[in-house]
Image (cartoon, rainbow over all chains, first blue to last red; front, side, top):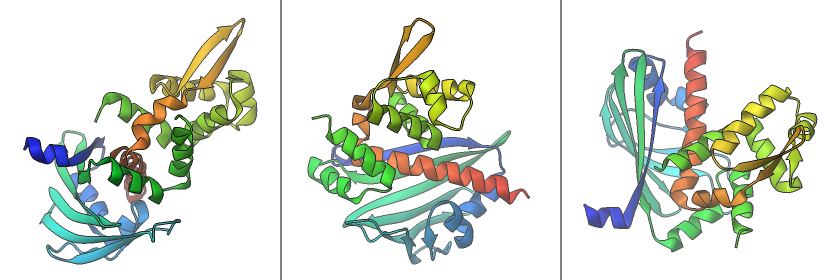
Length: 141
Length: 107
């Protein structure tokens, strides 16, 4: 366990949404809905299905994420791989019903922790904004 | 994730706050008054945004007479320099969009 922590890192985001889990599940698993908030895709909620997320290409990145569905437990758990620029990671969604809606937990795990990998990551730049942040952070040294 | 990092992501997820922060980074110290003049937003709204930025330690302020002057603290962005943090910004933005979509699905 300690070893895997040393090699990879996990990003976790949790939010309370005032919507029933069934509705959140639809937004996470219907291709046309996914496109509205995440990216263009040919997702299907079937374990083993290979698909791509496509976003606007930016310099040094073609905007494609190669994915495969790993877990589909309707209205509770969804997991897919997230491969881009030779880096494999895994995104896992967990929905828990609450009194007022849904607790959503997203884990994005498998980030290499080596400095070199972070450096490569710096080139891809998700958005113009992130690019600007890099300039600012870069200017700190 | 550290509390401070999530504060930074939250603070920068809003386009107006991002714009305010970028402006302070570019132009140096600005008064609330000057900032209000450069954005199409009311002074109370600007002050609210500045409070959020301050909590994330992205800006600091000093009072001089009746004016409050704000300065960007770009060194606070250092936690965003690695990959995980980058994705933190990305996913927080997407969560905002997801929430937006869920609102629209009601109609």
